[in-house]
Length: 257
Length: 337
Image 1 (cartoon, each protein chain N blue to C red):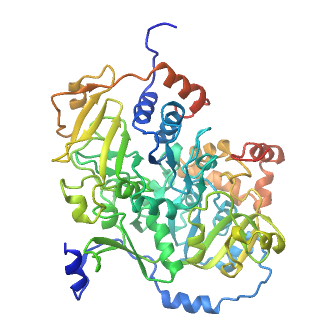
Image 2: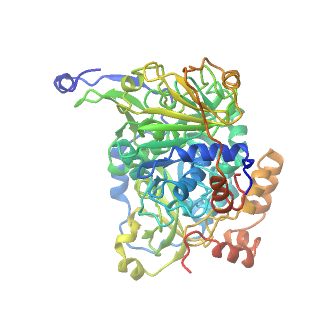
Image 3: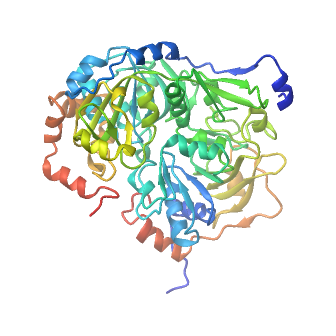
């Protein structure tokens, strides 16, 4: 084997970075797309006891093949329970679900997500799919992780529509609105960076840059003022083992990657 | 916000926020009780065709609901028949992929309680975009997925509203018909969602007897709630079994017969979607729709070929042929060898 790092594409990078955030022995609400691949990879790498939770009723599935939908047969493959949507979201509502993994079309500095409309709600420029389970996840899971491509059209000062709550207008706003205490956005995984939130101001801050990406590049690709701490880590590239499992086992048919 | 103790001593409940979304269906729980009282409890044979069920029970302007998760277990043979008969001005709750896309493509929808309409891995729904951006869909009321399931649960409980902790603080709530009140026991703001009672519910199941006792394998989405929130309930089923099969495993019955108005035998009734343990989704056909739905003209051609061009569900299946359908069976996730 050569020492040269293996090349990878943007999807593979997002999947591997997300996967590393999935802790063994925790509960994780898995949304459509990249979170599904990341969960499968995590189970095969470092988190065999990751309890996957799928919106329409699958709890504790072992992800052997790739789910194309949050209600597909794979989402309760060798699972411990097959129930329904109320049971799943109520489980999150009473505090059992640690992580929630989501995508979005737009995100603001407080982690509020838009998947509903671009433009005015009643006369939209682009009608997007809507909340789906996004709002339920962002409202009720302890820590929400968003996964998105990184550019100025998506990282905006103000989203056109708050579909899923982040920290809303800032510190204390979630609790004032009645959302469960101590919940909120935790990380954002992008093609350029791993981001988090300042503990006091609740504004988005840079934690690590993706391989080959400079801090300036991240700043330039963000449409709002991003907090830059003194210490910014460099996120390690996907390793050969992650890429092998991803390509040979998780998505052998190349549906996503 | 009041403290818990102040809230308990308080004599009035404060409304903190009212969603601006239209209440598309009144939560008339008294009327619903009367309706349910009058409904026949006889274990009668309710088998009929899709054509008869749609003709008898779904009227223009009705509020209807489909139960499914994405492309999984969707009542497609019934949806096709609604398009075939052109039942218009419908109000719908969705959570929808192929089902609502077809109704939107045929311009049959007037108002939506909308949680998610899209094509999942294949992206945005072009039909939703065209119908909403043009204003042909007159009213779009926002919700989360669980929000709709909870609204059905309220109706199933026979109560006019249900308190939940989703949707708070967001535009999703602002453009819904929900209200935020101060919970009278804790002082915590909670979202009150109105019960959603359907004129007609459509659910596809794995097996049912002729009277409508129905069982679902695998995850059950929000079938139990929606069945109990429907004034009329149309069940399509992969197979019709003897009542004795139901009685052998009564713990599996998710929908008892007295909720049901029509039972339709529809093998591959979820095609091109999937049915767990039975058949996989027909990815080729789904991709065909993703392509066709991009323009009104190609969408119309697709509807002509697969819906208007065939008389019924069997004729639709004949377009694909036995070999292709058999192949879908062998690809079913979780199928026992």
